[in-house]
Image 1 (cartoon, helix red, strand yellow):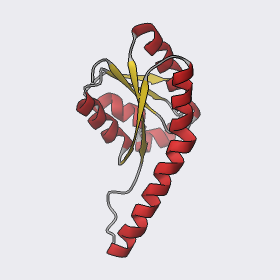
Image 2 (cartoon, one colour):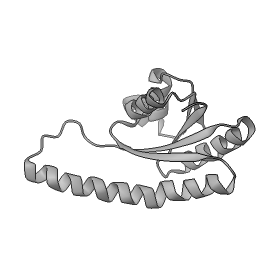
Image 3 (tube, rainbow, N blue to C red):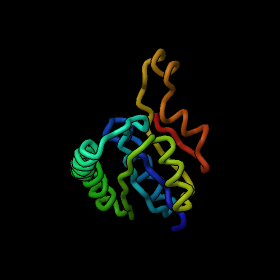
Image 4 (cartoon, helix red, strand yellow):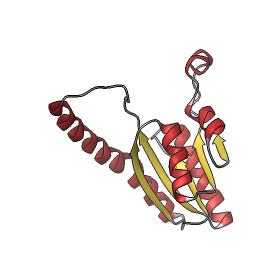
Length: 144
């Protein structure tokens, strides 16, 4: 895939602003958009077979909810604007996954929204946007 820009979506106001920005950029530069929603999960959990089975049911329910509530409206919006877009749902750490997807599909850019974490929380935990800026294999735009 060539000339693709990834847009990280999570249903927040910040991600809606990132989508607006990405649509304007796509229309101006003939980019295609890959809308990516990453559902965080704990990589530290040790699960039994029964828990894994229930976990898969939970994962499927999350996929369906994200598709219905976040990605379908975003895809409709891009179509209305005449912008070509695809979508993906992934599980994991959003910073790592967005970078991996960018590398995998040969994206030229990643666009995410800034959520506006409190100064203390951002200091203690950092934000996905700031970590992505530091680790992404491609340029990142953080939309305020």
